[in-house]
Image (cartoon, rainbow, N blue to C red; front, side, top):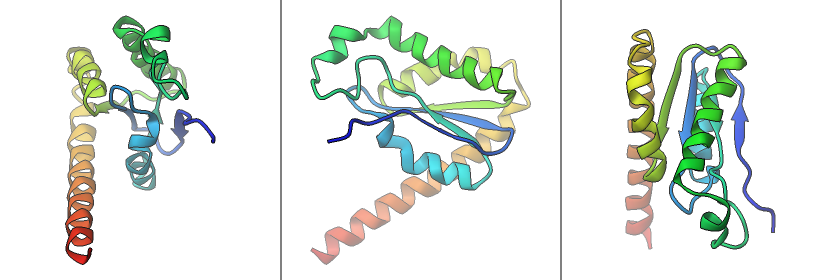
Length: 141
């Protein structure tokens, strides 16, 4: 069985970081990442330290909240080094906490507001599509 991997889907100049849940992996947000890439975004899905192993105990044996915050900062830094100046960060659960923690530093980049608004539209569409699909599958069973 192959273990989950982080992803880095290259696209255009605006970039999006998708952070996974506690005990989750980048696989949880990979489909959304591909959808955003098709819309022209560069998308990164890092993996929090200790996650994505065959042994769930590794989450706390290898990682801790301070390290997961550093994983988030490393992803932002990598995109900046690669020349991306418009970076939006989204996350589910634990990932959402780290996305919000970084929010004040992103607010200085007012130009990113348009990118964030556009990404929210695509996330809303993706979530609605997933919901409708689950309802449809539930009706058919």
